[in-house]
Amino acid sequence: MRPFDNPSRPVTIPGTGTTGFGSADCHRRILAPVALFLSLAVLVSCGGDGPTSPDPVDPPRAARINVVSGDGQRALAGSSLRDPVVVQVLDEEEQPLSGALVLFSPNHGVTEPTTTGTGPDGMAATRWTLGSTIGLQTLTITASSATANVSGHAVSVEDSLDVLFAPAEEAELAAVRADWASRDFSAVGGTIELEEAYNMGGHPTSLRVVSHQVEGLRHFGAIIVPDGAGPEGLPIIVYAHGGDNGVSVESTLFILTVALGEMTDDFVYVIPSFRDEPLRYDDRSWLSDGPASPWDRDVDDALALVNLTMETIPEAQTDRYIAAGASRGGGVAMLMGIRDERIAGVITFFGPTDFQNEWARDIASLLVRGVTVDLPGVEHLRATYLVPWWTGDVTLQDARLALIRRSAVLFAEDMPPLQVHHGDMDGVVSVTQAESMIRAMAEIGRGPPEFEAYIYPGATHEITSMPSAIPRAVAFLRNLLGSP
Image (cartoon, rainbow, N blue to C red; front, side):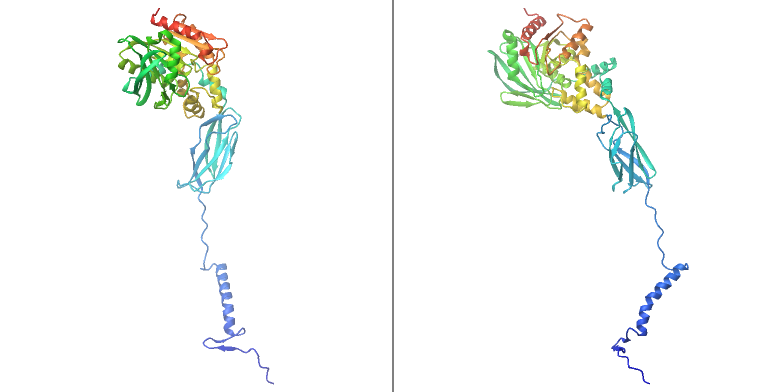
């Protein structure tokens, strides 16, 4: 019997041979990959020489941690350090290690973050809030088996201020005196910026705005000379202004005219500006070079202007002069008297005398806590000494010397005859400043006529609130000069 014909018999495609699902060629193509896979499996299982995977490589490990910044800071107990703690993780080849996990573990306080990964430069950082325990605290930084330690100092305000405001030592006073003696306040490069006639309350005078160099800084001031004075016939009065906003020549001369009255023609007047402040006259302004240095370098500027006056004004006496001032300028006048033996006497109205008493300490306590105190000269002390001392950027010794060299009471034995005026309701400069000077003078046995102090009940930070002050000042001035 003949079998049925297969309706699906192979089809021949020219150039390819006979193919089909059931063809031998088709079976060979399907089985070949399977056979290859099975062969590879056998070779691998039998340890043959087939393809192998590379040996795994251990990732780089942290070998060392460098502390970049943030070590040794201090802050109030329980508060955050000013700057973050920054570290760099290095591998065994001393290269920055990226992606390393860093753990920050303080023995007191907390960090944010506690863990973090290093960046491409191997850096990691955290903010550390100190614990409430006063004293040294430690932060341990870990990455793999590498460790490093950072210290933080938790302090209390009052304990720190006890150290800053401890009584001045003889060595510190000697250091300040040596510093003063080394300063050069000679007049250099004197120039007349403006010269014209000026009517001083009915008294004709010649007014000059002058400039000169002090320690390489250009400084401006005014010199006023009464008409008709003879050579070396008139003593100088230097008037140091208050506040932080510079000085007006017209306003200052008005005060002096009212105070001196018939004595207006008896003096050459010297009006200094201070560093980084303007001297203003007749809608014009001249800005003295900076940086500002209330009380301290103010004295250098005033003394240099006095020297220029003595060298260039024939009518001015050169053997003695008077220093006077109000508020900040009162403190300047007293320090001038201590530093320049040519000064015959000082008159001060509510000037600061003691930067180490309780009032000054209370101000410092507010400043290091971040409280703004709007008083003349205080911003300079805050930004230049007190806060930098608090954060560790200025040494304790430098901060102490900054306060000591501004404290006239500490050098009372060097003070020429002095008259002090202060109101007990002064809301700008505490009456305790005058009281400090009174105690200092009593301790060295100084009294009238070389030292006079007047405390005015109910008087404020205005000369007009103490009506008897001006007559007393004029009488003191006459006595200094031997005038009838």
